[in-house]
Structure formats: C-alpha cells, structure tokens
Image 1: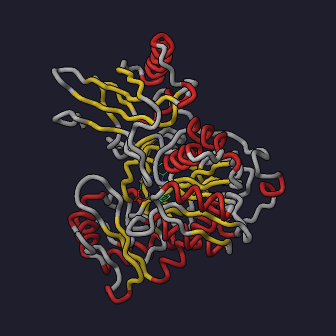
Image 2: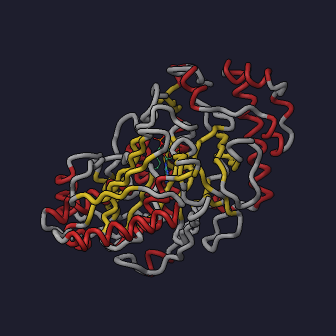
Image 3: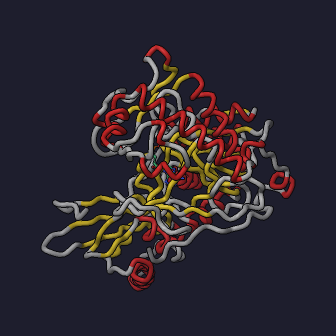
Length: 458
Ligand code: DLL
C-alpha cells in the first residue's frame, strides 16, 4: 500500500492548547492494565460472550455449530481463530433485530447504520450497554484533553447515527457542558461557536472544513473563534487534512474511531501523543487480517480490522469484519495507556478503487491533493469506464485566494496536482480545477467518490 503513512506527530503546546492542558493527564486504571492482566480479563469476557451468543442468538448458535465450536472450546485467546466471522450481510439477513441476546423489553435504545448502500442495519443497547458506551467515549475524550469546565459544541447528527448521542453521553460523563448543535444549518453553527464560545468542537473532519469555510464567508476568521481543540471521527481523513483544519481554527485535532455494529464512537481514540488510536481492549478484542485470506497479517502490517465485543449485552458480535484498513502498533505509548494503537484508517476495502489494475484509496488522492499549495480540502473522484479502460477524473476546488483567471497559472497548478497524484497512487488521472465553493458540502460524512462503472471490479 504505497504512499500511506502512519501518523506519528508528538503533540506540543499548540494554538490555544497550553502545556497545562496537555500534561494534566487523567488515566483510569482499566486503561493501564498489564498485557497479562488484560488478556486474562479478555479471555474471561470472551468466554462469557461466546456462551451468551450461543445460548441466546439463533444466528450464532447455527454458525458456531456449523464451525464445530461450542462455548467450552474457547480456552485461550488464540481460540478466537476458531470462531466464525460476522459481516454486514449477517446483520441484514437478520433484519431488523434478529441478533438480540436479550428480550426486546430489556432494550434501552436502538441506533442504525449510516451505510449509504443497501438495506439499513440496526443495533441495540441495554441500559448497561449505554452506560458502558458513555464511559468509553469519556475515556477517549479525557485522553484528548477534555475536562469538566469545558464547553463542547457537538455538530454530529442526533438520531439513528451513533455520533451525536454517543459523544453527548461521553461528554456528560466527563462532566463538561454541551451545546447540542447537531449537524446542518452551518451558518447557525458558526453563530453558536462565535457567540457561545465553545472550547471544543466534535463532528466529522469534513464538516469542520465546511464550518471553517462558512465562517470565513461570513467574515469570521475561524482562528479567532475561541475553540481550543477538537475530536473528529466518523470518516477517513489524512494527516494533511488534520494540518489544514488545525491551521484554519488554530486548534489541536484528535482522531477517534468507532462503528455502530460494535458500539459506535468509543472503540478507539487518540491520546495527546497522537501516535495512533488506543483501542479500548478491555471491551473489544481486535484482530488485523488479510482481507483475502482472512489470516492474521504480520505484526504492524496493514490489514482489515476485525472486532469482537467483550461486554455488549443486547447485541454481542463475534469477529465483525469492519472492511476498515489500518495497522496495529503494540509499542508502549508515553501516555501510559496500554491499549494497542490502530493507525488512521487509510480506507475501506469496499472504498478501494481498482483503476486499471492498481489499488487506489480515496485517502491517497486526498493526501496528494493537500500537498499542493492552493487546493482546498474539497474534492470529488469520479470513475468511469467509457470504453475498455477505467478513467478517473478528480475535481478539485481551488481556494478563493488562489483562484485566478490566468490560464497559465491554473494550468501550472493542475499539472502539479496531476504529478502529485501520480507519484502517490501510481495512476494517471484527469484533474479538473473547479471554482471555490462549487462542490457539494456535507454536514456528516462526506461523499468523495462516484463510481459510474457498470460493473465494479471487486
Ligand atoms: O461512524 C461511529 C462514529 C461516530 C465514530 C462518530 C466516530 C465518531 P458508522 O456510521 O457505523 O459509525 O460508520 C462506521 O465509519 O467502519 C469507518 O469506515 C468509518 N469511521 C469511523 N470513524 C473513523 C475514523 C460511526 N476516525 C465507519 N477514521 C467505520 C476513519 C472512520 N474512518
């Protein structure tokens, strides 16, 4: 996977975040278990989870029987390899709530996937699951500087999507105050951020870019907003995108990851060292596998993340294939947390474009674009196959201050982008520069790819 870099930027006092904010670390003992203690806890929880799934979820009972494994066969963590995988299709086949391990009367909440393709899928929580979820979100928020006394602007959708309610409960658990702005109506977001003076922004990274643009268009310099730091998640983004957002707002931006099938946000998040996202391993068992062979990849190699829930009551999930490509880093982290760290997600196996035989992730194109001075972090990749060859057009917005009527200037910019994309991805694409603020904006997860090929290649 050429051109993909693991984030490894130590955080220094930066922007409006002081050395005190960064050093005043709070850790819970559960985040600092020794490997030995953690593995003993994981094994006990895995055994319980498999027993629960076997006894209470017909889908798992059938699958486990077909695999010739019963709950008593899980004697060590290595026995995870004997368990069946779960995919999005399993959830779809058991639509809407066929994978519950508790009676419906014991549910406290239902959320849904934000998937853009196929049938939606639902996930369910008991009261205990909601409490666990709040604690897990609180942990990564705390790892990324959140403290009681902060005012937090949440611009994630509150609804079936897990972002809004999940982060809301996490911030409350920390004891900070919330502006539950929800997503959309960007000018109003700017007004709220300006007038209420939130310290912290929580949303998708692409929505943060959108908010910065709208602020600037309304005559408010984003860097003059009182924001100090942000927690972004819900979609892939690159280090270059982080740098641009941090510069625009004068903030420190942390990455956090999660998926509804496993719990929502709260699966992992960055600490102040920002050298990967600590996975909350006392609640989720992680594997990193080759998506073709499903065998574990070599230590530190990129592969597909697979998660098993260890404490979920309402909907335990065994070996969920996330389709997210990342890599694991087990080296110690200076923050003292012992949870293995996952790199940024570089893409999803189902996002991966095969262009004339070459694997290309949208994140590689973003990385290339943002290296070229003058491009806005707004782009759209269009793939088509008019004849027998794949053709890719990358539409790139120019920053207002860099937009020019001079053909030669625009041509030179286009050539630079073209060269950069070729050097990162190895494929030739057609670059089209478009005027500032002409590509569609999203209040949640951005859509970066339109694939018009009649038959997908994978
Ligand atoms: O996006 C949960 C979430 C909400 C996480 C808010 C973080 C913040 P889903 O809608 O089920 O759940 O989408 C999950 O989003 O499999 C990844 O492909 C992608 N994703 C989530 N966080 C990140 C991230 C929520 N930090 C899918 N980096 C996952 C890259 C991410 N991709």
